[in-house]
Image (tube, rainbow, N blue to C red):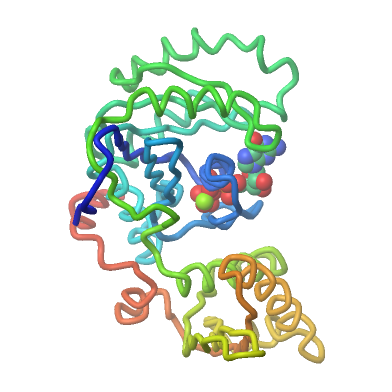
Length: 322
Ligand SMILES: Nc1nc2c(ncn2[C@@H]2O[C@H](COP(=O)(O)OP(=O)(O)OP(=O)(O)O)[C@@H](O)[C@H]2O)c(=O)[nH]1
Ligand SMILES: [Mg+2]
């Protein structure tokens, strides 16, 4: 629904942020937004749901669509995560295809074309992590682009960036603004996402679990909210959010690891997540965390839908022969 009473000079653009897992999509979204909204870890497949992150510069609204990293997998959870990424391009005016300079660059174009499995509209290439490559500004990126266009002919220009140092991100922002289309904004001024605070609360808990746990465990856990109550401030008393959440794991042995010795790990996850939720909501937060064994939750349609991951409509077509 469009907002009413809009300024006649308003412009808007929707930009899908795409690429393989771990290339730096969420880091770029956060840098552009100027806040740590999207979760970032050093592990691939951190982002599971696509969402809008909204940034307004003067009269221009940029709606960034953060998406999960596209990858090959025949597992139900990953198929649904991939579907989130594929649907992220629907309605986008522009796509940013992020390519990690620390990995095989051309292979990323080949893999992306195969995994996205649909025609993309206008697409710019954003080479990421320039700070991790020696003499990055001397890389023959124009030559790389010529080869990449043989794989994906609709690629337009490219940028060499770092979300760590901010290198060239302002150029990207400026060029995106230049492409914005005159017309009304989709979001109220001040709105930063289409997802509610409770979504980000689960994300911040999962982010800390990803950071503190290793091996396959991060991929076999999920977070669901059991209760989220906002208590309004009273005279002389601050308001607070009371949140109860469950970390779902696949096996009892995983429960013991997430809880940790004398509850040390779950306590640390809770402390770190609470700080981040509190910063986001600008409110005091009471966070109650539990660990629940929910065998094969990642194959359970009911739980996957609750996690915002509906069944991939075309999974049969996309994943045949794989
Ligand atoms: N040095 C450096 N590291 C970066 C940069 N951008 C991202 N990273 C790191 O790369 C890792 C992955 O970053 P994310 O932003 O989570 O990547 P993503 O593409 O969103 O990953 P998924 O959500 O798993 O698809 C993290 O450890 C980041 O800190 C960058 O410009 N420079
Ligand atoms: Mg991400």
